[in-house]
Image (cartoon, rainbow, N blue to C red; front, top):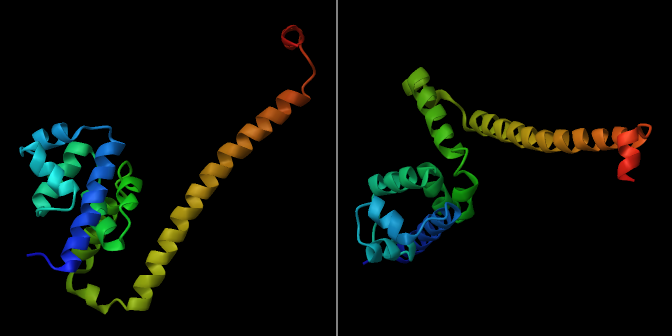
Length: 164
């Protein structure tokens, strides 16, 4: 029998899985077939019933072209939408692989990293990613605004006069 915490985790994971499937516009029967399980069993997983192994979760991510690590983090954060946010860019998987590279580089010396240094490094990286997205959005908006203003300010050509 599952504990209350396990039930809550299963429901959150089920919500994330369902959200990804819908985001990818797939039917439950398609995903179930790709996972080699009966449709009803898959539907139970989406409902937060039953157990799902990491191997099956990884296979689900492969079938739906999503981020298996983000599915786990979504459950831990209590935010199923996090899995959708990472589905296309694989943010959580990228982070996991970067941590794997850090482990290869430092090995046991990872233990010498101070918690405050780790927090500062992750906060800095997250801030830089946020700024990148904001600048990207601002760049596109500014570019379009500048081009539109230039087009409006330019003298009317014979082609523009015909449109008026």
